[in-house]
Image (tube, rainbow, N blue to C red):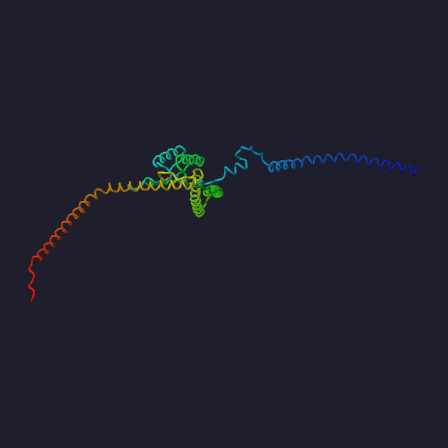
Length: 322
């Protein structure tokens, strides 16, 4: 009986312990859920914020200006300079055509030097040197116009990349403007004369440097927005051949050049004689008088010699001694 009673008590104790364990488990789960709701929500918010900050931006369209490839090209700062040597048969007509084209494209002539030659020189010695500024997007159109209006014998192009210098100048301007704003705030808060003078001195230095850097940036903008063309034009009577000539063509060109040179020499000689007439006429008269007087002097000298010989012949010979 005692054994049976002890066994029943043991079973009752085990059942009571099991029931307590079953009741405590849901309470712990509820506490865990409550803790997760209070802290897990914060974690989720922080995680969502971190994900939103680190997530890559949406890829722009292929034609968008913010795409990596096109943005790199658009932000690149290049100074384009072209050098052209051309020939023309009519310098005045070509210069007038160039002036009209430059105005149409929105450019301007920065420097012009024209040599017309002397009165005795041939037309082929006339030439012009021009420095032309044209918007960079109109450079190709201007070069095409020059090629169509004249004979281009030399062409070269140079593109200088100043992107790094341009960006550094922009950054320097931003830094100086920020410092200027801060100095103005400190100037308003200055309480003694010493601080006031120091801030004003620094503010003056910052403004001076800001003006210089801003002027440099404007110069960069002008050089980038407007391309430079160094144009040299020579007036000729015959264009320089572009292709290599054969032997017969060289012989024909040489013979033609010789006749042309002879014609130019005769023309220049005639021009010289006509222009020198005011000097040649009196010189010719003086030379003619000198020649005439010389003839008279020679004639008188010859007469005197003949008279002396006749006089000597008329004198008697001295007697000869026996």
